[in-house]
Length: 374
Image (cartoon, rainbow, N blue to C red; front, side, top):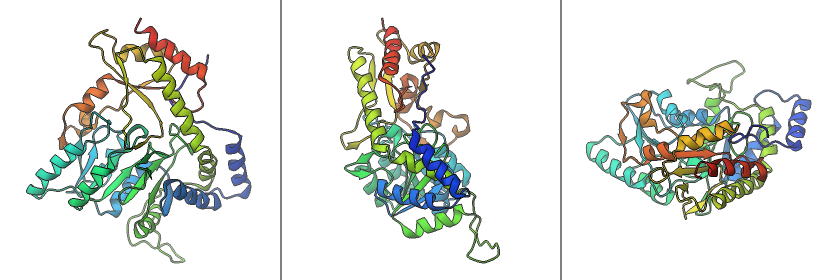
């Protein structure tokens, strides 16, 4: 059996056709009909009014912060349990990240800790300039609590839905909360353009400014003229063509990843040491990643014992995100931590979840994991 990867791109013949058509049209540069169509299709998928294709979700986060005027001396609230890009974008502006721990019942940013931190900072006059709310592992954060809470303190939300395209909260699409949402099309995401991302929003002025900034902030003159610092953060037409083909099968990919998650749950149902990421009752995930937590208090089978066993059988797995307050670069960042994400990192593991995996490959993964508990 060939190596089983964590979340490989799921590519079919339609992708080749779309990319070949884009190349034949000679729209190779960062503009063109496929990019415009992809942006329109992203709006339809996320039920938003404006979409801007960009070089990465990290670039989208950075541009959103720039638009909001975040800079040195400001503080931006963000989940500590996330990929580093969520926090790196804050650092690009010179602002300081304020790290908030997770809710154990969802693994998402804790509304209780957010409320506690905002109450204290309000009294001190040190409220955050913005909040980046991460939709972790394909599941939305608890926007029913977070949106009114942050609105109360007039703190704009940037939704980091990099992992959550296709997920919903109370029927509302991931990416459509707050001032804007950010989506990733990295190679391991539920759909991919190889590399790339997008910003989606219902705010027309924000969308126009983001598009302007991403295009080097060039003014509408025959010569090159710039009134503010711009960025070369555009997505190319040819990558957008790939994204368009991928987007056509988003629902199929979501259903397959849900099926894979169900196969894991059935295989491990009699192993009391294994639990899964909780599925919040307030929405539907896109099942991007099947994540487990291993309680080693009884059988002494640790996360790393399982991870190493999988690796010995040419199966890729990965620990859950190492929280940002553990990272040397952010050791001095202000934080409100209750230990939840530290425990998840210590015991948690991501299992192969790609929509292109076969049932026999999933069975093989399950057999290796179960062997560890014999």
